[in-house]
Amino acid sequence: MAAQTKYYSYETDMLVKITETSSKLIGTTANLKANTWICLRDLLYGCMLPSGNDAAYTLAETIGYFILAAEKYRNTDHFASIEKMDLTGENTSVYVNEFIKSMNLKADELELIQTRFSNPHGLQNAMNVSSAKDVLLLCLQATKNRTFRHVMNS
Image (cartoon, rainbow, N blue to C red; front, side, top):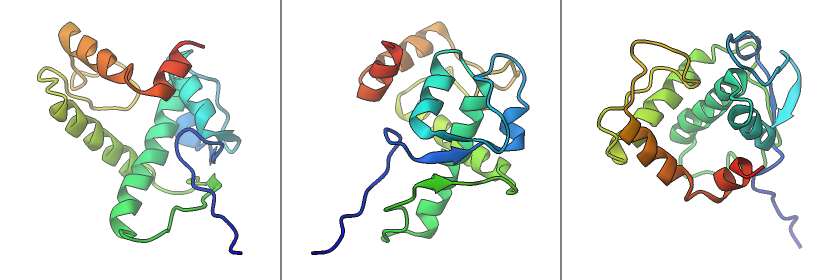
């Protein structure tokens, strides 16, 4: 009998190594330290509970990597059993930009017409804009996600 492959998702214990860039973000943080490991699920908590800019940036690096890599490895099992993600030493700004592009596509899909994202953490930036109505619509959409609800209720 063939060994079963464990598939990972944002709800799992996949480990992510914290980059120097993430660890140096200003504002509120989850206090992440460069070159340490954290599971993806805990990054969600670090992003949402203390509003950790470092956790949000690390999530953007990781998810952006997967978005770009999915295009490269289309129709393969390339991601089937990734247990650790180490992006230290890479130019992760490419991944973060891909994540931001994905955020803006999702905003368009949800018809958040007054929303434009320019960074993954929400630190003030003239290009990062939204409206109260769009924030409400985004929150209503987010609460449909089981993992989001679980973290929110913690």
